Image 1 (cartoon, rainbow over the protein chains, first blue to last red):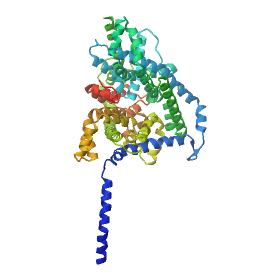
Image 2: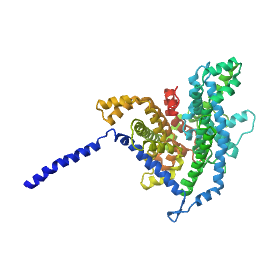
Image 3: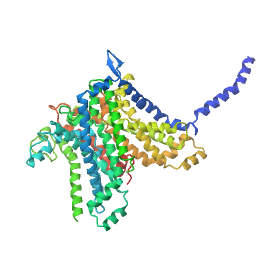
Image 4: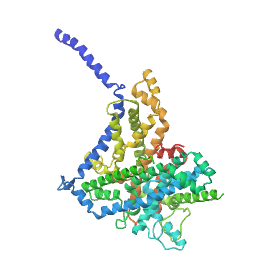
Length: 312
Length: 271
């Protein structure tokens, strides 16, 4: 009896010390706090970002044979570069890029300049109306456009025939369908980019315009000579974000044109979806996704170089 | 004078082009399929709204879809704002090992298109039995580098002296963050909330992949199912569904236009 009491007493201070240490470790102090605050984000990024990035990279080199994934080296990529639909999706995406991005950049800049006019009344109404498309779900707007562009019953062809022209088979011909996608994206994003442009315009010192006026410059000269050079970094920013967005197009291709006719409008994202989740070719689809990463990285680097790091 | 005329004319044309699809959507939502598909342009409101509502409810159980979308979006927005502001705070107001590398790594993921992640995410969700759950829609989207970046930028403007004063007053680190820092960050939190809310409300590709039963669908995926077979497609019903998905956002936008625009730009544009 007495022995055990003695040991207990002897042990007590040690136990107390351990307890205090544990307690001290458990309380959040200035040293441990940042890790506590970062813990959820670290955990989420590890599981839902880092792991998929690595897994996808491994999948690129694998294919599904008899119930298991086996290493096949670069054969997914070899197959991909011989795949005519992949090349079609790539060229479609570049058609959108080359035609749509410049149109939208130009339109959003012109609208921004108009909206920035000092004499303009009901500015709020104009801004709100032009921005409204940017809050619409891509699926919803794609469905509205699909109905409006219907060859027989669509509103757009009604107006075209009212003007005495032939109806255009928008969604069933290659270029009609491409133009439909381009009109759709332009409608959805011009207002959004216009707001970014307005922010850029407001950064231009008014003295520049005043001195140009004294020199007798007209509106067009001021636009080309002052406005465009001054908002060049913003133009490049808009061009860059629009490019990256275009490369990842999915909803418009999926809903508005279903990639058709005959894959004339299919995008890289849509082809990836078909391979991954219609045909369940996970290895092949991963190879498409990493090709997309490389293209985005290359184009971003190019644009960054051209803009000399946004300095220009 | 000519400048005024040109400006107003061009802006009016742009506004008409911008608003017409909405008008068309609302008009079609109140008309029957036959009226929409008639040979004369239909530009006036009809009397089939109630009929279309009952038809739509038969097809997709609209209240359920609304509830799904609201649950997914609100839960996501709340978690994203909480986690991203915690991370932003830690990255600005503390010194610790690996801080810069950690931030650089998060920023690097901004370069990765989400489409790269979907196949491994799907197999992951499948192996832990989480496909066809709302958690599977919400969790991966929380790995959003932009949210962390935005909150980090905003935390830089918060005076460190206030945090130090709270410490001297004996406030714990956690309490300081929730009781002192967060209440003073309302504009930034608002901007991030709007950004996250919109992104999730409209999100389509990942929910389409991971949700497999009608009762779990969010709005965009349910909308897409209405678009299915051409021969039995009812355009009035389809446009009504599109209108219902747009109206909540539209109301929010019209009420808080300036905050909304600034929020959608990720707080980048201030007016």
